[in-house]
Amino acid sequence: MKKIIMFLLCLAAVVGLQAQTAIPYTQGFESSSLPSGWSHIGSGTAACQTSYPHTGTYSLKFSAATSDNVVKLPTFAQEIANLEIAFWSRPEGTGSSGNFDI
Image: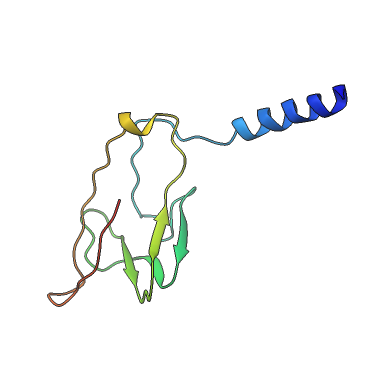
């Protein structure tokens, strides 16, 4: 029984040690690929490209989605109530539509 409890405590400690990103956090797309810790989920693509950057050379473009097209950011070491996110967005064209959820 002690071995099982020790195993569960070790497992809980490992899960609790997942990498967390420190605040403040800023990110650009100048590496021409998704930043470290970011991941793409869903259909379509999320790619760094040179079209329409706000600053620098690259921007992130979502395209060809038939359902959700999501980029997941890293885990932060703060409660969500204490976080603020700011970004620039641009529709692909005048006829572009779709939902933009955060």
